[in-house]
Structures are given as structure tokens and as C-alpha cells.
Image (cartoon, rainbow, N blue to C red; front, side):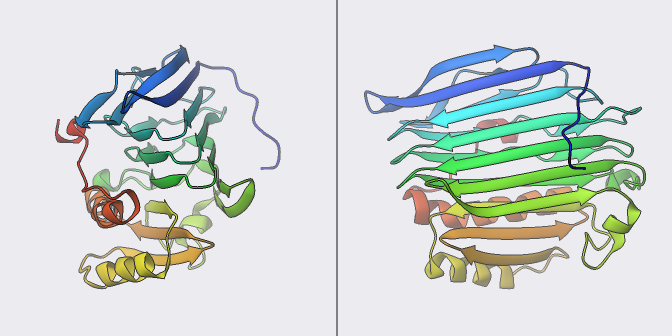
Length: 277
């Protein structure tokens, strides 16, 4: 699909900006429109802000449009997550649209750790994510998509997905990932998703051969049925996972985040409290 879909539905927008004030990261700007909200920052790690993005309706239908813009200013430290999975329901015709723009300035760090997106059979999703880093900015983040509901034996037989993720450092495009699922062949093909309904990707920057080998050694110990691969592209570590068990995939991504966080951010991993609720 080359043209962007034009939809009629619920529109929601959230714009956040974080900055460092008196040795603590604060939410300097918060603007929202429609059903997207954010709770006040929490500080289980003193100066680093934990932020939870909320979508009160709990699900997205065809025609809905969600837009999130997040900027982390110099020296600020932010971990951003969601309290639960995003749900994209059956569409009678219109596409749902999800647009995310993350901008991390020099000297800042962002951990982008949303729960998975679950696409019900028949959903139509057009998604665009742009991650922009400047100079010494640091980033760890992931993206998880579940096509259908494997726990209920529901395959993604009739839906469509057009998803793109772009990662930039100092205006240089380092990674451009596209996922297009337009028919069942995309799900089953060896060059597609290999009959695996769950797809996950973790990005970490900046990394070098040391971090790459650490992650490879960690994956070598994995006895799960997940398909995995990790690469290093111009300092960007990219981990890709395929599987059919959502909890297993999340546990693996969290374990790699636990491994990388001390190496990139020089602090131990502290899980967001909302994950335990």
C-alpha cells in the first residue's frame, strides 16, 4: 500500500517533552487530544522518570488514529511503557492508524518498552514509528506484534498490516524495517513469518561487538522455541524474535533488556511497577 489511508474515526494525540530539572527528569510539556493520557511520572530510581501511557478505551477499531510524539531533552532519563497490551479489532473496511515519533537529544536516554499489540483476525493496521537520536543519546526499545490470538487458536487469516520502523542517528538513516502482511502467504512463507504469529524486535544504541557477543551468548542459552537473530548495524544492535507464545517472548525481551541496561545506561534493571499489577 503506497498511499496513506484516510480514515474517519476516533482521533487521539499525545505530545510529551521531558527535561532535567534539579537532578530529576520532569515532564515539562504534556498535551493531549482525545483518548490518550499519561499518568504523572514515577521515580523508583530517583532521578529517572517512569512514565505510563494510557489509552482508556482499551482497544482500537478501523478508522481510529493514534499519534504519540515524545521528546527527551539533554540529560533527561525516561523509561516509557504501557499498562497493558494494545488491541486492534476487526475492521469492516477502514484502516486503524498508529503513528509514533520518538526524539532523544544528546546526553539523554530513552527506554521505550510498550506491551505488545494484539491484532485480532480481520484488523487492518497502518503503523509508522520514527526514532531519532542525536550525538550521545542512548536508546533501548522494543516492538511486539501478535497477529491473531494463538491462545484461542485464532489465526490472522483476513487482516492486513502495513508497518514501518525507521531509526536515525544525527539525521542518518541506520535502519528501515517494513512488515507487510496482506494475505495468509505472508504468514506461512519461509521468507515471511514462518507460521509464527508473534514478531518482536529490540533495538539498542550505541552498542559494539562486546554487547553483540553478550547477547549472542545469552541467546545461545535459550531453550525456548523462539526463533531469534541478532545483528549490529553502525552501532545499532537489532534483535529479532519469532514465536507463538506471548509470555515467553516478553520474558526473553525483558531478559535481554536486563543484560543491556547496565552496559548502556550504567544502572541495574528496575522493572516498571505497573507490570506487576
